[in-house]
Length: 153
Image (tube, rainbow, N blue to C red; front, side, top):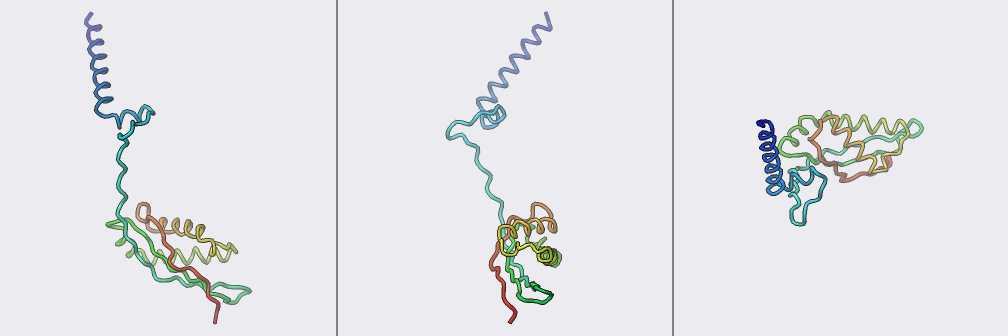
C-alpha cells in the first residue's frame, strides 16, 4: 500500500511540474517537443557580436606567363574581426597572415587556377586561410576593397 501512495505522489509531482513548465516556460518546452511558439512568443534573437575592421596593406603579386612577369595582381582587403581581442590578435599575427595569403595565391597561380578573378571563390578560400592562421572565432569576414591586375609598364 505504501508503494502505491508513493507512486501516486510522484505522478502528481511530475504532472504538476510538467504543467508549471508548460505554463511558465513555453519558449523552452515547446521547441523540445517540436512545436512552434504562438505569435508574439518567439524567443528574442541574440544581438550580433561586436566587430571591428582592420585594414591590411595591399598585397602585390607578379603573374607569370611563359617564364616572365606580364602583369601584377593587386589586392587590398580589410578583415572584420570580433571584438575585443580580434584586432589585437590580428595585429600580432599579421606577418604570418600576409605570408599565408601570398603562399596561397601563388599556389593558385602555379596550379593554373583562375581563382584570382572569381572573387567569391577567392573570398571563401582566403577566409579559410585566415581562420587557419588566427584560429576559430576570431574572424567574421573578409572585405575586398580593391582587386585588379596591372600590366607591367
